[in-house]
Length: 200
Image (cartoon, rainbow, N blue to C red):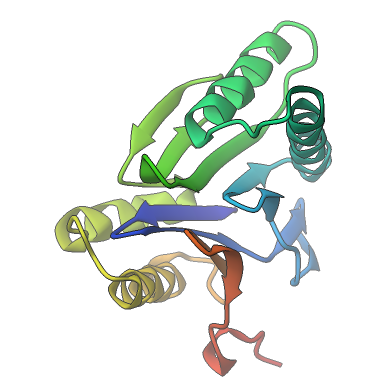
């Protein structure tokens, strides 16, 4: 029942994830942050089995930090995506990880980028992407309304349309979302206001 969305624009990349954690038909919590800050220029949104997602995203974050300490330089978003894809693919025959991910990052020379990575190790660089049931509702919306060089405000507005579409059309509505952005100034969380709060 997870929703994970991402898109890029003119100098920014957004990633959003729902905040609900389920176990069978039980909603365990409604305030989970499924987007990991890997470093000052990269965010990794990860949905799937809670144990796998927590364990794997922390593993990736720590190994990227270790690489930086050992080599004196950071991995690019492109290199990070290949590292993540390789670890997922390698784990398939040993200890499969049920993790579907969207990696976003920003480099001065390459600008913003988004990588769509699935639990089988498939990876694609995209302008926008989604995982989970939310992807069924948002793919056509993004396909119609996304355009190159969108401003950040336009991107946030399009994401909000996606959130509304999910909560209107998906049989299990009431999802709240975490929305984060990465730009040349680093990573930050975007305040979605009271409409994103859990209704009592």
